Image 1 (cartoon, helix red, strand yellow):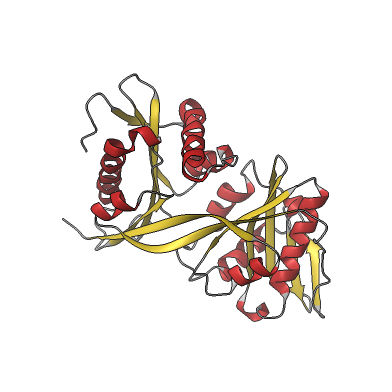
Image 2: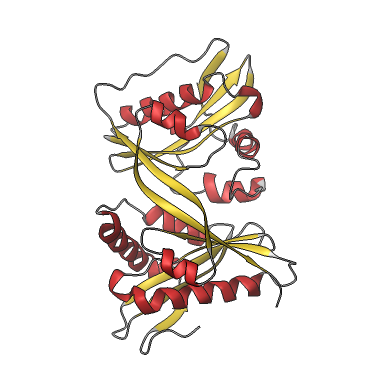
Length: 307
């Protein structure tokens, strides 16, 4: 990789670089879409997660951080995810170099794999750099939201369905099993062991079991929703219903229960991220619940072969 003259690349660490990475991503969001969410927890969890495969900072000629990059993969011989926010004034030379660096590192950590997919997640304006590096746009994710207003009303679950509170510790393995089942085969989702789930989710500072609920159909667990609160913004984390419980209104009942819990805890806005191409109708569910698209994230993909 060749960065522009005067720029330097170095490994990133949570202790030394989290604050700078948060500032970079915040500045990028303000420039690209005009608003920025609290991203410190997301970046920290990415860098400390079980799938983390490398993180780097780029310093400009004055020594100030101007970009960061990371790779993540549950199975580095199959699919590797990459991300590299760059401050707007440094993008022209730095972002193409970082994309090349991430591809090189992806090949290194997947030695022996017959082929793998390298996913490059990007926000607005990255298409020329991604396409120049041989990536194709394959998916768009939506960041959706709605305010808490007088139109919000919780609904009763369908007949035969009970929505119950999550029981900390007792439901940990059940939550993992439900999420693995509900999201199996979805785009970008790889199987995760319970040990990795515990590390990434239950041990995360953002995990709040009091904001999670389990759906049971005639006594059998079939769905789950998890949430967390950042300031006055309520986030829906995972909402999944296994195949045997779909098309019965369980997803909507879980979503409404999540909204109710977050509102009770003081949320003024409700937000989530969703695959716009989700095959189970998730986007229709969220739109029916009054949520609208606030911004988009784009996923580019490149198949890497040996050599």
